Length: 158
Ligand SMILES: Nc1ncnc2c1ncn2[C@@H]1O[C@H](COP(=O)(O)OP(=O)(O)O)[C@@H](O)[C@H]1O
Ligand SMILES: [Mg+2]
Image (cartoon, rainbow, N blue to C red; front, side, top):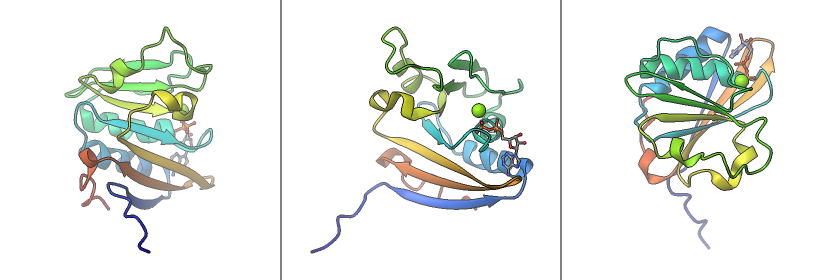
C-alpha cells in the first residue's frame, strides 16, 4: 500500500526572534501574492497574526498602518493590490448578512485572522500561516499551501 500523495500541500517552517523578523517574513510572503489569494492566520492571541499582516501589507503597497480589525470584522487597505484584513474573532457562527466570499473572490488579497470561526465559508484553496509563541520574542511560523494555484509559489522563500 502506498500512502496517498498529498498533492498541493507544502509546508515550510521559520523561526523569528523578534517582531521585525516576523514583519520581514510577511514581506517575503506578501511579495509572492496575487489578487484573489487567501491567507488564513492561525494562532493564539499575541502570536503575531496582525504583525505578519503588517509585512504582507507592505509588500502589497499598503501605506496606511495596519492594526487589528477586531471590532470591524474587515478592514480594506488600498495598495498595488488591495488588502482585505478580516478578523472573525467576533463573528458568531455564520452570519448570513455578511458576505465573506466577496473578499475571497475579489481583486485583492484576503488575510483572515481566526478563520475557524467560519470554516464552512472558506475557499478550498488557501495559504495557511500558523504562528506559535515559543517565548516572549520567539515565534515558530509554519507556511502551508493547499491547492494547485499555490504550488511552487513560495519555494524560494527562506
Ligand atoms: N517574533 C515575534 N513575532 C511577532 N510578534 C512578536 C514577536 N516578538 C514579540 N512580538 C510581539 O507580540 C505581539 C503580537 O501581537 P499581534 O501581532 O497583534 O498578535 P495577534 O494578532 O496574533 O493577536 C506584538 O506586541 C509584537 O510586538
Ligand atoms: Mg490580531
